[in-house]
Length: 218
Image (tube, rainbow, N blue to C red):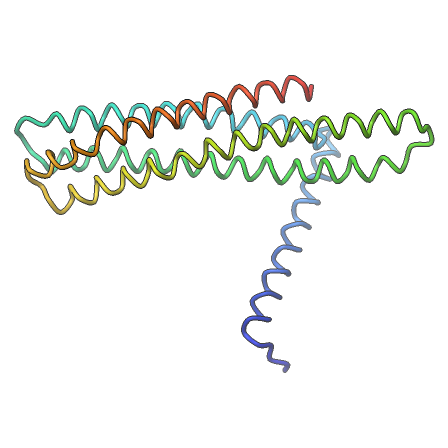
């Protein structure tokens, strides 16, 4: 039995997994096309999925901000319940953020497949004028897609600092269940509010770009 060096083994394993994933994706797209749903349709559906996920995430982060604001207004009572409420708000926000990221990745997968197919099919034209027109449409669509993807990823990147702040506050409160801890968290709240407001603004830009791209794609 041939034993590969550890690094080479890892690279080989990654390559095999990537090939397996591409084969699965190719089979999926072929199956969908057999029932009349082409890559363009799948791309539209997945962009709509990102847009809807961002709407949900935006509302969740806004609700979480309200929850933190309410809980930091603590004026006596059971601090354990304050911690549990903030922990739940953080967990819900993390879940929505993960959903947004996963859906953006899915958009990239089908977009790459669609553009590769479009590029290959340019060679099938016998009409030079139709080929040039299709090539121009491909170039414009790619440019519009890139603009949309940049706004998606920009909004996605704004979730990380908010989640880190949420996590910091929840962890701190977990080990400091006293009124002094609430006072320390209040000092951090202004920065958290600014980060969430920035996040919401970026998400709204991304949602608008998604709607624009979908309209042009159709």
